[in-house]
Length: 307
Image (tube, rainbow, N blue to C red):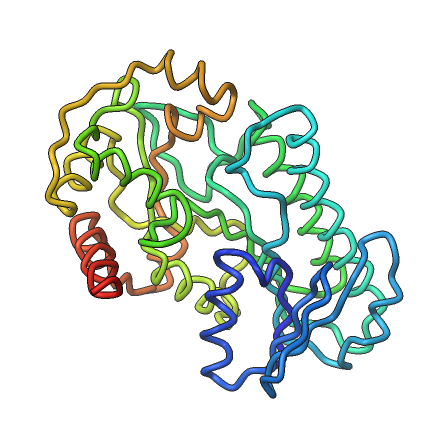
């Protein structure tokens, strides 16, 4: 297959590229930097979202587009960075729409990254892909605008999958290493009330779900990419402490986290109980369906890698 990826130098894009290389798929990576590769299956194409001249370097046929481009949510949410978070996602997705419109052969599918931040925060409600909401905060506004832009590809006959990521667990990248640090120092525990839901997914299951959605022609629209067993933060803390062999007794008041992180604190102090109904209805097999085995795998791998 020929696969086009944006955000290929990022956390998930980089890992997916490694899998596609092993499958001998030709991967075309859109990058704003000057990257090159001697690998026969990797092809970098430099682009500018305001200049479509890069399209001349594209192959005649692309089977799957994976769109992961976007400024990180992990930097402090200043007004300028919040605008960058939105613009970086919309600009690249709009650019992909322009390419699809003029492409000699229409791609089969666009798998567009998204987030469970689409759903309202709640300590009691349960959400799946059938639930629809208007934007209610900054993150949901970004997700809604991004998904709306991605859906425009369907006008050209492209199947669009909106991959709503939950909390991605990986031992080396993403949020988990930062979450684990206080536990390693003996200061892990409850954050805020501890009642907020964490809808999580092991990184290997996420990558498999992305590949699964890319080739399964019956999957379209929103897809919650989370494990089937969400946990409240205080429960998550117990499992994380056990996997690390460290205590979990420190309680950090929510107002302190809000003071340090500002609006970005919602990523820690608020959450949603989200179920992956679409994946389960299509018989997707989770390798790590429970938090206990997911964390045990990740930290055993991490310990082995450092040995």
